[in-house]
Image (tube, rainbow, N blue to C red; front, side):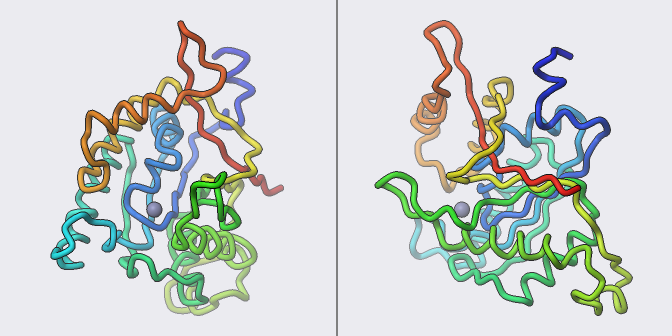
Length: 245
Ligand SMILES: [Zn+2]
């Protein structure tokens, strides 16, 4: 291991269990797929929880929500297999109408207490604009909000959702770190050059989402980091990382 790798913010001593909770199929791969592929290859165990099945993200306006869910879940499962993910769960809430409700917070606390991850990955609820060309999807913002609200103060506090303890035996669980993707305020930048191709390959499983695969690949390869040179290309993914002590 090089000195750089030993000092990397993800140089955990032991294999970690990592739970990724985001709004839509394709969010994990778009937001941080190269990082997840890097972690899977380093021997960490990755699980996905998708809050919706993306039933409004489809070209064919005549398709039923049921059909779209089926297609997008199958695409997500195929993409997760490319990344090296151990399990994928869907809450199947309606796409586009997510709200950070107490009921949804309870459902997320349930999965955290069931899986007992060391690390949780979500996205930044405060990320509303990027430059002057992008408004972030409300589902992304509300997913980030409800997930962070589930992490603190609920997941490891037995006074929150005591019915999960009483009825399901799900004891409080404390995470060690939260990695917040899709953020305008990153504190950690990972070099993911070695797994950028895996990210592209995983994203290409989301066939209903990417348009022409050749053009898509070109667009993704063009997302080089600023430190790239003529000879060497670099790719990065950025996070705001919270470490609990
Ligand atoms: Zn999305």
